[in-house]
Image (cartoon, rainbow, N blue to C red; front, side, top):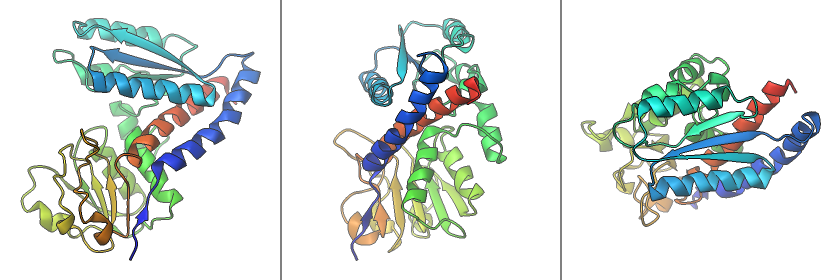
Length: 282
């Protein structure tokens, strides 16, 4: 059996192409103004700076603008909240992204929740999470929303399947579990402290690696024929799932890199375009 590679890079590129005419329609309606994504980077973490640059490049590819806001590592919670308030009130900004993680000493959750729900295109607020979980209209957290789009495109069956999510973060593991549950999967949430993790992993029809630890999940644990989504990314192009032996066990899997990451960025851009369309009532 040859495992299907779930190519997020190609799908993300195709998704971007569908956004170009929508951005052009916004420009025509708004007399040349484009959707604007504001990205806030606090501190000088090289990886975070790279991610912000990648998101800015994606904006350019679809004809959008990105407003990059750089703040020093010494920024206080009060100062960051003031900047978010300013962007909330700017009618030319349609989406706000606060790059995670922020430096220690900043109340990240308070800052996330200060983002106007109409501009929460990264899906990080408690309000957005709650609305998504209840099946109401909301911008989904970008990585799990991108994963759901990937599963849909490749026609991976979800209804009735046992999905095991290894990870419980507020912006990945928890929303991922709820999105799968909303699509009628049976969902188990595990984490790094789960007793007998291999037992739960071996039961998964759909396995989501979202724990943030390099190759914590061993390929030997995986059920033959499972669909494996690796949302981890670590130095050396390593994910949360062990690569060796994976192609022989899984029926389909995401490569690292080139699987989940591109879909995260494409989802962010798509949701910013949607925000601009709603703002202009298109």
